[in-house]
Structures are given as C-alpha cells and as structure tokens.
Image 1 (cartoon, helix red, strand yellow):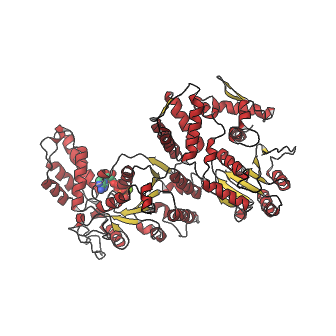
Image 2 (cartoon, protein in one colour):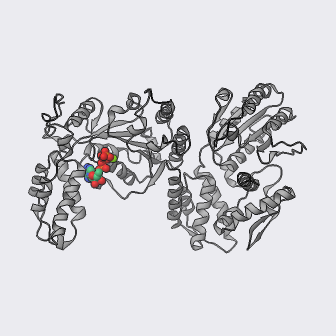
Image 3 (cartoon, helix red, strand yellow):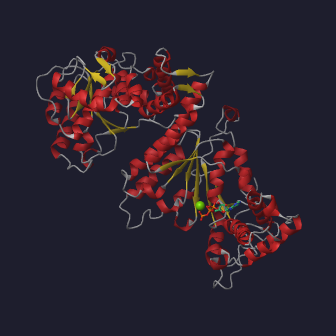
Length: 632
Ligand SMILES: Nc1ncnc2c1ncn2[C@@H]1O[C@H](COP(=O)(O)OP(=O)(O)OP(=O)(O)O)[C@@H](O)[C@H]1O
Ligand SMILES: [Mg+2]
C-alpha cells in the first residue's frame, strides 16, 4: 500500500470515530482494544478484514505515542457538534433547500465538516426532505447510509454514475477531488470535470434533491466548473466548540485517575480561549499535551496551550504569533496616535455596544523609516491586552506555501477565530505594490480584492494595523475611506519627542550604579541633547545611547556627558542623506494623513508644506514637520 493511501486510510480510520450516522461510533469504539506495546488495535466490525489489518498498522503507529493516544481515545461523538456555528448551519441548510447541486468547502477539518454536514442534512426540522449522507474517497469509494453496492466505486466516474441513480434524497461528500482538479502537481482529469458538468443539470432536475459537496484542504477549481460551484466558508471552531471538546476530555479523564483535574470556576473557559485559532484536532492535541506534561490540568496550562498555538500558527509560515512585552510607555512621542488608540481601547467589549459603536477597523501608519512604526504596532497588543498576529505579506505571494488566495483566507480566518485580536501587516506595500501593473498575472489583484472586501465588511473585532514606508507604491483603493479608520503619518521626531525618546532609552539601559557614576541627567542636559539631535530618527537616538555606553564600557569606566555628545557628533542622520524622499512623503502626508505627533509636541515647527526642493543639498527638512493637524 502506498504511503499516500496509507495516510488517507489513517484519516478515514480516525474519522470513523467521530462521524455520527446510523452506526454509532460507540459501537466501533468498543471494537478497539488497547495494548501497551502496540497502542490501540482497531478491530472494527464495520471494516473488512484486510482493511482492518492495514488499519492496525497505521493506527498503531499513530497511537503508541502517549500524547496522541490520549487524544485518540477520546475521539468520541463530540458535544461540540451541538455548538455548530449558526452561520454555517444556516448557509448550508439554505443552499440545500435551494437545491444547489455542487458545493465546495475548503478546510483541513474533514471530520468536523462531515459531522456538521451530516447533522444539517439529516435534521428534519431544517430540511423538509432530510438527506441520506454518503462519503466518497479515492481509497474507500462510496460509503455511508446503508450503502451496500457490489460495484467498485473507487473510480470517481463510476461513483458519479451511481450517485445520479440514487433513489433517495442525498448529500454526497467528496474527498480527494482537489487532486483530480490538478492539485498536488497532478494533471487535471478532464473526464471528471466533464462528468461533473453533465451531472449538475440532472441533479437540479432530479425529483429527489441531491447535492455534491467537495471537501478539500485547498481551493482548486477548474475554470470550466467555476459557474457551477458554490464555495462555502467553513470557519475555525468557535469558543463553544472548543470548550465542548475540552469538557469531553475532562469528563473522560476525570474518572480514569491518570490525570488530576484542578480547575476552578471559569478556568476551563480560559483554557478554551487560549486554544482559539486552532482546528478542533489541534486544540485537542494541545489540551492532551497540557494534561500529560505534568499529569495535571490546571489554569497554568494556558501557557502550554499558547505555546502550542504559537508553534502551530508559525507552521503556516504566513502568520506569526507575537508575544511582545512592549507597552505604550516604551514608545516616545507620537502622542496624537497614542491618544487615538487609547480612546479605542475596550471598544470590542459589550460596554461599547451601548454607544452603538462599530468595531474599529484599523490604522495605516506610514512615515519616515526608524521612527517607531513597528514599535507602536507591537505595543498596541500589550496596551489593549489582545493577541497580536503578524502577517508576512511577502510570504503570501512567495508561492512556496499554497496559493496566494488560500494563504490570505487562512490568515483572515485565523485572526477572526482568535478575535478580538490585532492583525499587524508590516510593510504592506511590499505585497500590494504591483497591483494592476503589467507584470501581475492577476493574483495580486485578486488577493488584494479579497483583503479589501474583508477590511470593508468584517464583522469580527480584528483590528488591522498596517505599516508602510513607501506609500507611493500603495494602490489608491487601499487608502479610500472605509478601509482604514485613519491614516497616520510618523515624521522625524520633534525636539520634545527626541527628549522623550532619549530619556526612555537612557532609563532603560542606564541602571547599574557603577556605570552611572557621577552622571546626572537633568532637564537642561536632556534639552541640550534634544537640540543636538535635530533630524535624528528614533532608531538613531537609541543608537546614540548604545554608542555612548560602548565608549564607557570600552574604557571600563562610568558614563559621561561627553560620551553622549561624541556619539551624537559621529552620527549622520538619515534625514541628511534622504532629505528628498522625506520631503516627498511629507507632501503626500499633508493631504492624506494625520500627524502622529500632537500639536503641543510640534509647536516649534511649521506645518506648511515646503516647496519641493530642487536638489538634495538645498532641502532642509529640520524646520518643518508633515501630516495634517488633527488632534485626538
Ligand atoms: N518613538 C520611539 N520611541 C522609542 N523608541 C523608538 C521610537 N522610534 C524608534 N525607536 C527605536 O528604534 C527602533 C526601530 O524602530 P521601528 O522598527 O519601530 O521603526 P520603523 O518605523 O518600523 O522603521 P522601518 O520603517 O525601518 O521598519 C525601535 O526598536 C526603538 O528601539
Ligand atoms: Mg518597521
């Protein structure tokens, strides 16, 4: 048996424990025994002898690992089914009632989607004509609901013939069709596409309603089928679903005596919240790991689950879960932007509903490099106490991991699943700069479209914080109202801001008594440093502090004022070398963006746009500051 079909068999076996239906999963479960040396042995009465043997092998391999064993042994009819998201339930029920012949659901969670589809299709309160449910896979052919045909149904064409002749209302779930559509570097099978196109009208007209549902981990649709297929979104599990799984596991392990459960009121909810953003299977594994690691499940396991989640999310290679301990106090200056953010804190809570406030969509922060754009993005999550996900926009388009559209959908779903959350898109222009240009094959435009539509219509509290250096390459649609709540411009720090930033970094690093020696930082000295550093960006100011400390360190002595002054003299700020670019973005910002610096902090600078400098030499960027003046 090939590796691929072995793996599929393993998936089938696992699903057989979770899918409801006429044969109770409990019956199957009783057919298994646990052998300490070999893990779980599957002897299911519903599996033919030769299949059972193969099943033994792969299941055995999977289950000898205690972590997996624990998780597998509780693969029972999940209460979580009752917690099915209403949106999915209603959408599918309506599509079935409206007799849509062909649906496509993109998900990794075969078991969960099959279980939920089965529940919808067999529920007489939802459908006047409940459907029989069948599942087709390339390894097992057509199975389910009393299906006992002798024919080989492993061929997709043979299966579709049989489906067309079925006498009862049916819902047929098709696994593996994405491979026939050309995924996994396989050639597209034109006969299957043709047969599907032929069957669509006959399913529509059939006296008994029948629907085919393709379930696949990736969205691959041949062009010819695009008008016939309805794509249905299947979100990651909700809080209630995850909590139900956790409670199932707690109930199963409480009595066994192997695991101590030490949870106070609401601790289970905190554990479930920590697992949001994972698939049901991943959440289960994370809980299992939390249980087996020290034999106890208590609230401290939130950390184990978060760590597991970080790893799983990192594996997507597009998103990174950032745990930052930076707070808003670590950002010097930018008062206006900070105030705007403070006003929106807790806007996702119920209290905000009393004011009928929408969830804030997000901000776009642009400006001079090194002035704290990324820094403030990281500090928002600590200020708002929300999880922070960083989206690597470059990777979405890299082609290394899945298709670009799928990647952006995955990222959106993950951020929504852990909402309220902050989604940080650093250097957004890198992904969306080529939109509409001749070199673009249309992918970037489609991904961009998906993203914009989501930004405009999202209902879940996912706050998007996008940072951009080069706004000129951003498509204008992105900047239109309704996408971001506000566009902020971060300019070179003003003298008050420089004093703030210097003080912050000096306090952060200058802690040791011996290093401090006789050095006393008073207001006058700070103001003097601020004067001397006109035109420096935040990163350069931080470097001044570091360089001064190196002077003292290299001579093994306390720090002095001279060290700072020397470090300042030795720095050639970016504003000198890139004056022209800074002028250009200021002109842009004066029309479109709000200054991140408050009026008080930029009192000594004019805000009138300077005329464009003819040459780099004549451009003095130190007298003005850009961005519209709107104080929050
Ligand atoms: N306003 C600030 N307050 C305190 N530190 C700052 C500030 N601005 C910059 N820094 C320091 O400079 C470092 C670099 O800043 P950051 O990465 O946030 O800049 P950026 O605007 O994102 O730059 P880039 O456009 O190059 O990505 C920060 O880690 C921080 O130490
Ligand atoms: Mg940055």
